[in-house]
Image (tube, rainbow, N blue to C red):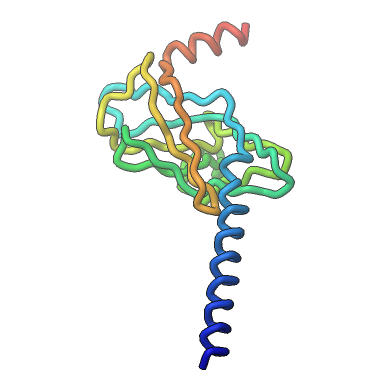
Length: 162
């Protein structure tokens, strides 16, 4: 009887230590991602959504997947991409963005991005929004980003093309 109790206790201790060490290793994914140049587009009047962009750099030796985004300024946030279907640009939701080992993933206009859908407040230039990124292991990273005007950005881009 005492042997069984001792064996069960030992198994439970090993199980807890394994779970703790596994979660400690996995929780590091968010720490391995560096975020640069984050911004959210200002929402035009009458629009039901806007988008957030940034560059995600993976400092680790393993691929990391961004699997979810959330924010308190919109009812939902979704990972989206653009595709060219016979000359027609289409946007669709995807289940993850992969950030390659020692590489980067760019979230940019006309490419991968985070859609902020049904805002709960106006999203206007000059303000900041916070988007929480969730990685495959469940770890999170909060990104505070400025809201930029689309019109000012287009004017800036236009000046650089001449």
